[in-house]
Length: 558
Image 1 (spheres, rainbow, N blue to C red):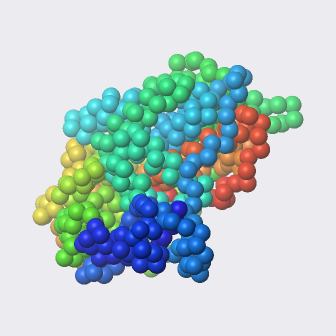
Image 2: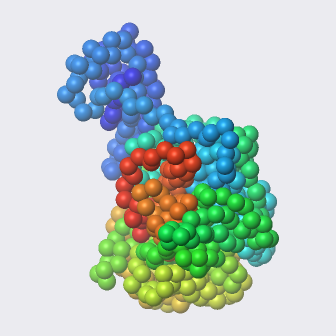
Image 3: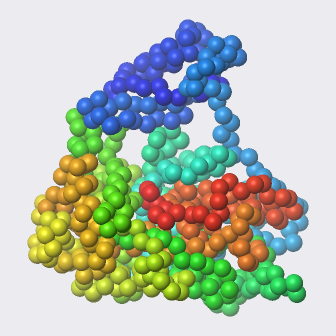
């Protein structure tokens, strides 16, 4: 197969135009083109008056070697790479112990899936409920103001990603095509096949629910044991005679002990009690940057016009998104986070007496409003002291948001015009908020640090220079957005194990190594591979990228 990149065609090109463009690029006749498929389709909307589609194509041709030799100097023509996933290990016929995966968010889901495919029969523990029951509990907060601290947007099968836009694009580098494995398995589980080739794939909440159920059934057929409402309260860590620390088991809330020497820790960014437990057990934990801010809502039609001009509403473009960044005079950076076209703002708290906002969309992205986090980067210098001080920092502002919202789980809200003018809002304008159970109009400066308020006030007019109307008076802001990423990193080494506790594999968003569904899923696969290699006595390959990293604002896309 031959890979062709950067094939550019008008948005409304006829179907035959793509084939003609392939023939022209390769300099061959129609009879020489055996078949082709679209590997990637994106669009260039930098000029809304002339939007183009950009294709990456895999083509099968007669006498491929001759064509490649003739076009050897063209950087847009090459041999199609093998994007199939390669299994790195296979479990022995008898297992001395079974690996344990804690958490069933995207990271834990794929860690368990890969371990099951390799034959290791993982035990997968989830503190929350199965996804259908969890959905009912989540709706109870949104509709009745009833919070279940163990079953909500953050906890339960599918993780926080279940109640999101289901975005599947990321900025991670993926030389081993683990990301392709994620997308392929999602399609097998019921995702639309287009996620394999569109440049910004998404699924939507309702489809994610059925996909998670399908993947659970597949894992169980492969020998995985998945246990819900099984909260891990403690980890048994043995210190050997030579001073080495080693995992020997996990202890559940009811007192049950599961023996294991390989634990994948995929608990997500909001497992605050687990972070405290790990720190108390001496696992190395360090504070890391994250971001806080608000959710902002505009008419989706306004965003569509600003991004797509006369092509707004075109079926191949769908609802428009955006990505914005502004560097402020006070040294802070403000950026859009987890932008959800045609979606809604949702209540995402996991603790009583606190308000947290997030965004989600369905696959259709057909709701009236566009919403996005507008958040400000902060560092451990803003919450100095204890390595877990970031948790207290988040809780402080979530509690103030609860109070500012009327102490009923309504979110505090403010019109953009009033926010810029520094006065509380008293009435909604043309943009009505989508947040449930409701929005209490007030002054958002009461539930955000002063430097965050200052930075956002500077950024909104700057964003309006990129998206006309972004600082419109009637746009509505709700607070607070605090769960952009974990405020800690559970540092791991090149073998993906905790740097001071053998057998413990920190993974995904909760450990500070991912952000969003795709990157968390890929990290789950990486960690599962490391566990499989360790359990079969094989040496792990050189690590791809620095394990001391992670991201200070890790979801870029939500």
